[in-house]
Structure formats: structure tokens, C-alpha cells
Length: 142
Image (tube, rainbow, N blue to C red; front, side, top):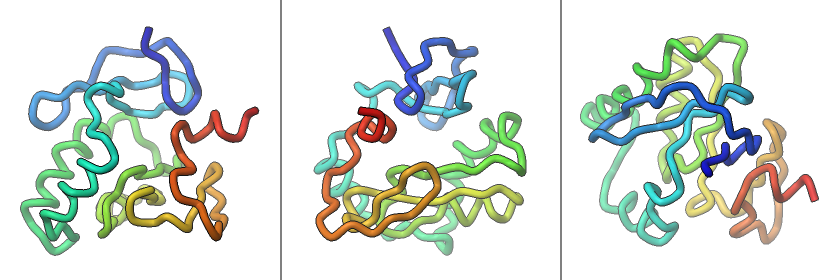
């Protein structure tokens, strides 16, 4: 059974079609849009893939790619919401694109920001924080 990786809810609305035919789930409880774990790359493959590119807010192709994910999600987003781009890569861009649309989005990537720990939307610096997130909320509820 699929559960939300943030709040562990098991009730979802219809799936959202994203870029390259990938499907995402929308959690009705916490409003997280997420893909299934088997559709995600492992951390090393993800980091290697990010390092092959020079993605930034100035790369029109990358911005176009991110907008393919942003635009289908916009009907579910409100100005008073706060997002987290978990897995933003070395040059956070999604948060900047959402800011242009009046939306708040923080960023974190365990492959590139090893000394930062996000708890909710509060930032804590950790001296040896590598691999803290295997499940963002589960780590703090036990």
C-alpha cells in the first residue's frame, strides 16, 4: 500500500501526470505531491545526474522542464502555503520560479547541503548531518 512519505496518509485524489509521463500522487491530508519510491533514483545516481548539468534559473531549458511540473500543480497551491523542494540539486531553482508566482518554497538536498537539517520550515545547522533524511518526519516522531 502506498502512503504519503511526509504524513503517512493513505488517501489520495487522482494521480497527477507530470513530465515524461511520470505520475504523481496528491496527499489530501498534507497536500504533498510525490512519486512512488521505486520511481526515484538512488542518491548516488541522482547526484551524478545533477553534476552532468549546469541547471540554474538562467537555463531556459531547465526552467521549461521545471515549469512542466509546476504548472499542473498550481491549482493545488495557495499563497499561504509553504513548500519544500527536497532534492533541489546544487543550484536551487524551483523555489525561485515559485517565488515569481507568489509562492513560498524552501530547498534542501542531502547530496549537496549536508550540513543543513530542515524540521518543518525551521533551519538548523548540524556539524555532521549527512544522510539525516531517510523519511523526513519519521526521524523526529520516535
